[in-house]
Structures are given as structure tokens and as C-alpha cells.
Length: 155
Image (cartoon, rainbow, N blue to C red; front, side):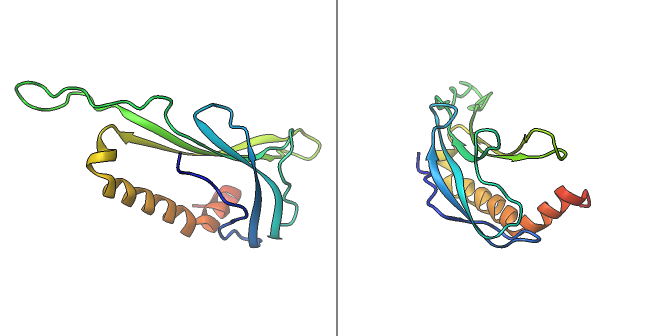
């Protein structure tokens, strides 16, 4: 797997945060087809933010398919492939949050799921990369706005 987060990770802009950074420690992923990192220290100004603990997780995991699916055979007359399977990749961040003071932490789960049509990895890599570039860029560009929407409910 080519993903290998390096520490520290520079966080994207969020209302009320100044220059957020996250120091990572390699962790054991919950499944053999993944990698995971735990946030063990914070940098910048992030008042009241907690690092990873057993009861209050702060982790990021990356998963690839356990077995990659291949394209089926084309129809002998039409040449069309009737069913194109997807190879699913995931990035999941878990952060413990308090639903109310005095209550136990609950997991806030952020998932990006990438359903890659089999065969497109070799036949159309530039367009896969363009889609990822746009997706990740949009998330990064709108990080503070997404944070504002999650906390205020206003889109």
C-alpha cells in the first residue's frame, strides 16, 4: 500500500483553530488489509481537543480491498461487459466526542469510500487521479465550512 502518513500532519483550516498539527504513531489497523495511525500529540491552537486514548479514539485508517476484482468477459456478440465490479478503498477517521457532559465518549466517524470500477486502474488512471484530486481538494478547501456546517447545521 502506497499510503504512509508522515508525522506531523498539518491540519486544514477550522474556525477557532490556529495552525493545527497532529503527531502520529503507527497503530494496528482493525483489519489485515489496512494501515492505521493514532494521534498522540497536538500542535497549534486547538483548545479542548484531546489526543488518542483507549476510551477516546483519534485514529485514521486506510483500507484496500482484500482481493481485487477483475473485469468479466465481454459478450461475444455485443462486446459489452455486462457487469463491472468495484474495488472498494476506504479512509476512515475516528474521533471520540462527548454527546453531553458526564456521558461516555462516542465515536464520530468520517469515511471516504472510493468504489473504483475494475479495469479503470490500468485503462484510465489519469481520470481516477483527477477525481481524487478534486475530491480531496474540495474537502481541504472547504474544511472550515464543513466544520461550521457540522456544528451549526447551516449549509
